[in-house]
Image (tube, rainbow, N blue to C red):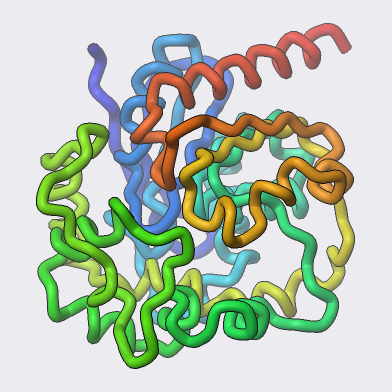
Length: 323
């Protein structure tokens, strides 16, 4: 098997580390929290074998990419801008795009701001939600789930970092695998979320300990501030995206989620993705619900997810070729 290549490219004022493999149409794989490029290792190898040029960056704030400390440097304009600059650096007008978790949120906005740069989209775990015209995201989450919700606890700079520092990075990552976690990730009053989360005594079979240890080494070097800053920019993103209130995602999209994903029942995700509103906001949409799959679905169901990605991109390539 040909090795995955690594390099750093300059984009949007930062240096971004990318892993890449293969030749052909570009596929961009966007990771989430608290992941690195290697969460896509299975997809990189198999998509490359099927004739794609696959690129998986360490996103801003992660791994071997630059990690600004200021939360203001993590707005959705910065994150989408990083990817547009990456496409330009790669000399590509368009890409097929896959996102997971925060990567899915970034991918939705990439399609919203620059649909001309995306051939087709596969998003995992995080649906495109309508923007509230009145309430900021943190206000909504606090109103619904209180101050114990992980998103609420991540808001104040330095607080989550201090609670994380009670553990080594490998233990933090094991906790954040969310094995046997409740449907809503919220701690009781007065309890830090990282203390509340269970540390699994053994890892599920879909977790590669060597990869997890590699992630831990990267977080030892960078800390978790860059990753947490994505949450701290949520309200600023709400302000910045006001001009897109009610806007639709017109890129051909497949949305995939596991029926054991956190909040699938409690957040109302199941009803939303099966209802009319989601399909109104994303008109060219296919929804796939995978049984017995949790949050890290591209790891847990790696082969099935890769087949879903390939089938969507092949179909869209055929449609594009006939027009």
